[in-house]
Image (cartoon, rainbow, N blue to C red; front, side, top):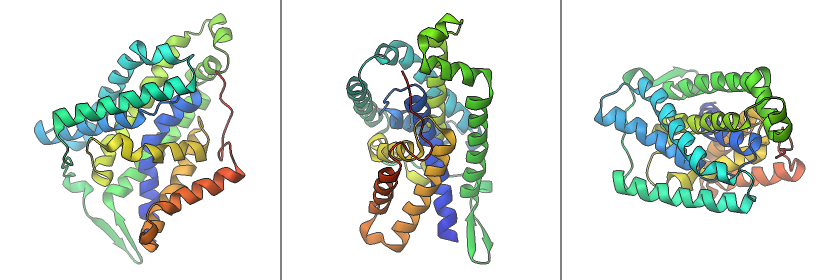
Length: 285
């Protein structure tokens, strides 16, 4: 039961970081392999505020999300917007270039070492139940992730903004014809995706660690979540993250000899039977 609980917590953290990629890739049809760089930025903002400025941990989370969103808006307006109509190959090459630039920047400002972070006392420790040890911080991650998943699903499917976003993606010309500011919708959506990445990166420092190799080390996991869950589907990303988190933790615990191989095997099997993902929808430009 403890392994399952830790797997759920790991999956929830994976969801928090990767759901932003699902938003930009699935809803905007942009292959943004630099998503992990935005998560890394959120992590560095968090540890800098926490360790150097003495800001309380919970206060660093919205600041990290907002700072990452602001950087995302600047990059979207100056760089990403020029590539919305480009081929996926151009988008991949551009975003990979951003990844290596972010790695070089992190090396320059913070060095190659892992960044230390000490959680506040109320998020440390465990709750011991018969047959189950519940980490307080992992429980916090699960509750927060469920709240964010619910809010995002409501935003995309039950609000005017969500309807305008879907219209802007499916038929931008018709959306402009009915008065929707497509460029502003895309900017807000990109800001949302990067803010979620920054928040997930800040929350993931304690479990995943933080060093300049973060964007390369974990981008495959984020892509697996989007591929298995179905790009652009919030609940699909949640279910995929839970499955992959539990399988990954259980595989590393029970068969450590093959390490992370189990999660890739599960991905291959699921995509053989559901190539569009569990809850995939076909994205249109």
